[in-house]
Image 1 (tube, helix red, strand yellow):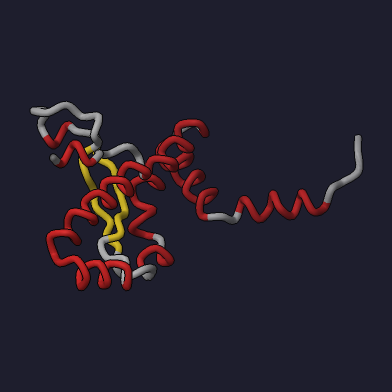
Image 2 (cartoon, one colour):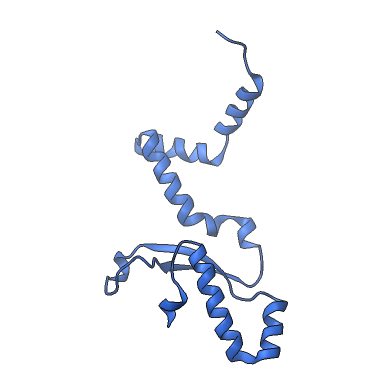
Length: 135
């Protein structure tokens, strides 16, 4: 028997009051899921809905767009309804950098530069596509 660690106990009590803990309890009690299944459901819900429910994300950075796209690993010809989908947040307009590029080099150069950058940004968020995929 050891000494009580009041700080750890307080942290554990606060963890029980989180939204994740509430969700896990609801899934566990309501559907009779074991803890590992409830955790898997919570993880899936966070991956799918979190970008749309997070108020900080929704109110952040103008010039960004969040899209649900087909994962690049999916083969051609597969029905869209059976494809694995993925959310990606892309920077459509980078502010002064894009404004300057558009003014100095024109719309065609702007589009060519942005397509490459958008591909790189998508690639960094999950290996969705490359510049060669768009060619």
